[in-house]
Length: 491
Ligand code: ACM
Image (cartoon, rainbow, N blue to C red; front, side, top):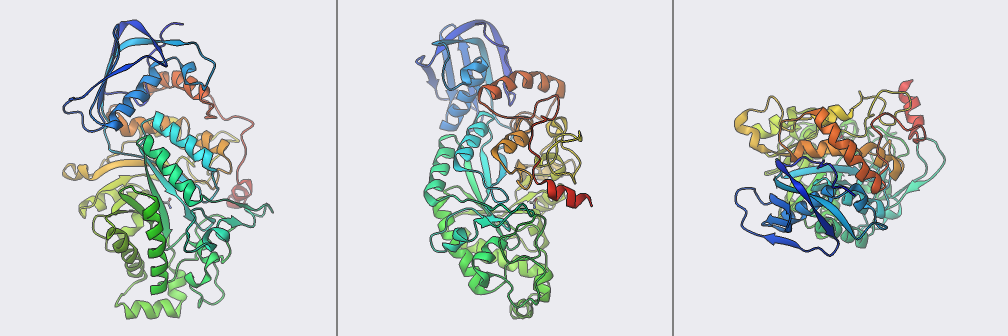
């Protein structure tokens, strides 16, 4: 078998191909050298020549990235689990590589639809292959609470199951035990991936309120919002109340979350918190007055500050969506800008680090084309592979002296339209291949050149059993998730 074409994704900084090839087997030693200057903590040099394979890398993460590149230099069949020859051809090559951004994230929403543990582990493998290094794990929602909290067992006993979804009459649910979480976090760490948990407050909390009604605004007459684990999608008006007891509840939750997730960052969400209930609640209005606050936005900022201060006292940093800019920001909070990139510019102006996640570029729950039958959110314009590849993490209008506040970006996989792991594969790949290059590789991009490499790379995804969207169009067998929601929204 001849050495294959070289088609590494994400594209390395520098790649020079030699003329020979080396036979590589599972017992072939790799020479490791230290002392590589100026490529940063994740940079590496990889050489294949007649003597074999050499990595120059100064950190375990850099060695790991070199290994992922090596896997992509082998023929695609080498990525199959079993059944190959004893040795594989490797092209002589020299690669020098380092990432553009340190935060190369993917948000995985396991709350709207639960994703079994084995699938989360598999997703981490695929992230690692693409040098994506942050799993932003969206664990709580109106539609489900997915992480076991020992102090509050009803969060999962009640909050992890909903009666049905959009009138389908079938219960849906599931959750991760604390042992599952520890396993997933350790598995990610072995792949140099940090897991950032998101406990979304004070909106998106109906599942918690269903489990513990005292967390809700119980004095709101004839509440328009749901009080059971929500069976529909959209933005619920149901939100947490602003009692000290509710703050204490979430501080206790955060104690367990911080024990489970050793990474630097904890995400508190803060997005899409409708203010109707607080406006209608005599008790919330009384709290607002007691606290000397003038608006409901101030109430939200106050609530987030109480939780943030508790988490910060444990030495952790906070992450929140750009709605948190509506109030005073807790010191050091990283702002993820999703409604565009204005939030990123504003956060940087206020001296905060920021992640860019603009929905019209990197929300991969959106459709990949407007072809009939294409899965994904029907109410948004499609995010084609070409568009995903054209994403630029630093906003055009970011003042250059503030650009260093952009520490990276996140693509998102919200799961209203992803009822099964097969659909997650379909929505994620190959758009995450494109995204990985926007955050790892340089700012220069040539879509046709990328597409050429991708055609080879898809053979690797085939070998790994990934059910990506083919380049030529939607697969006719693809499930049509949440078809009823689609129909309702079209009305
Ligand atoms: C979001 O999409 N609500 C962050």
